[in-house]
Length: 156
Image (cartoon, rainbow, N blue to C red; front, side, top):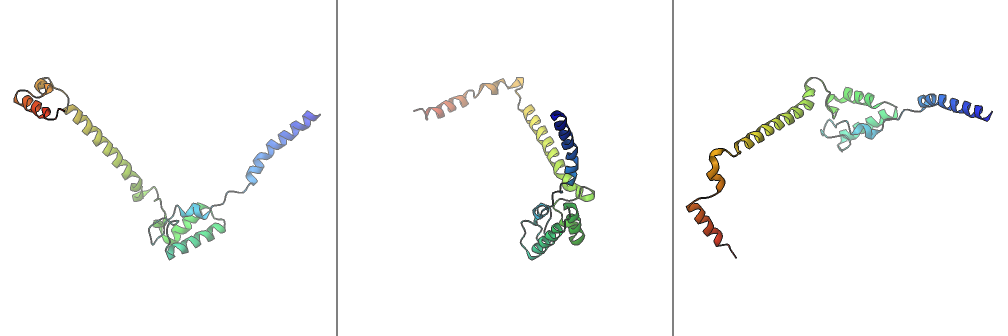
C-alpha cells in the first residue's frame, strides 16, 4: 500500500512540474541588461558609460520602461522610436548595416590569403638551387682571409 501511495505521489509531482514551470515568473529585464546594448545619442558611447544630461534622461526613461514590465526587445523598440536607429549599439543585420559585420570578416580573410601567398613565395624564392654551391660554402679567397682576420681580432 505504501508503494502505491509513493508511486502516486511521484507521478503527481512529475505531472505538476510543467505547471510550475509555466507559473514561474519570467525573469524581468534589468536596466543594466539594456544599458550595455544601447548608446547615448549625444555622446556616441554606451549608455552605461555615458554621463551626459541626455544620457541621464535616457537612463531614467529605460528605468521607467523596465519598471512597467517591458521586455528588452520592447525597450529597444521604444528607444529606436524615440531616438532613432543610431541608439542601438549593434546595427541591424540587414541593408547597409550588414557591412558592419561583413567588412571585418572579409578583411581578415583577404589579409590571411595575402600573408599565405607572401610566405609561400618567400619560401619558394629562398630555396637552395643547384647553381648556388659556391654561396652555400661561404666566403672564398680574399673574403675568407678578411673574415678570418676580422674574427682573429676578437679572439681572447
